[in-house]
Image 1 (cartoon, rainbow, N blue to C red):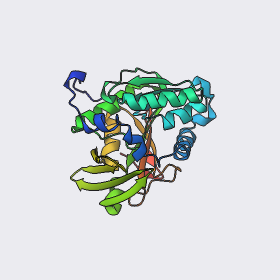
Image 2 (image 1 turned 45 degrees about the horizontal axis):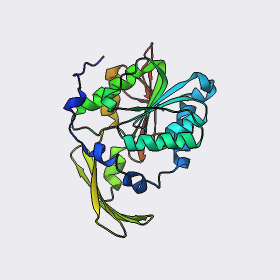
Image 3 (image 1 turned 90 degrees about the horizontal axis):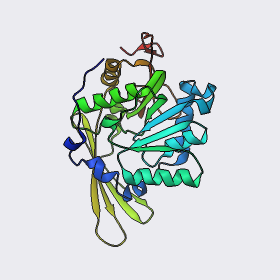
Length: 276
């Protein structure tokens, strides 16, 4: 089991994700990410973990970096007991309003993912839509995996959804522009060392433009699986998109990793491919 430094909330500086994810324009920029995508993703997760074969109201789920609750709400609709955690009060308020509108029970927690303190509580922990790799230090990313491990009951599942770095390197679009409602959105992307950085300029029909940045560390399959195993996870499978197709390192846009907090550990393989 890995050891980790204590991380005090008072030590945390203001980061890009604290500013950007708490801004009302965030949901407008990503309005093309709809509930159909979330529904497909949730269906794949439940099928591959075989949790769809169990009684839903007896199972609890933690959605780390839940945002406005797209995936958490889909899980709640199916009858799961869901907790959504996020650092953004604005996004959590949007999730709360959406849950109330649908009369869905949804527990919400507002804290830095490095400070999550749940112990052996959940049957499933999900971390989706590239909500991992935000921090400057790899040790902080490792700490998040540790928090996810401790939040799970034994035999519980952790599903981590990342960008596939090889696919990104081969298909990156350095500059793009699009229209979202009345907004013009210009996005500039740069790959530098182990990170993808995106500069987002938002131009309204009237008034001043505003600019935000996103920066995410990219992990190879070998590196992230080693980090998961360091915490004690047993690797089960990796899929390459939200439909659940098998991960192909050179082609898959996503790298969605399924692993368990297991009492008995086995040698992990995916389609005959060893994950060690």
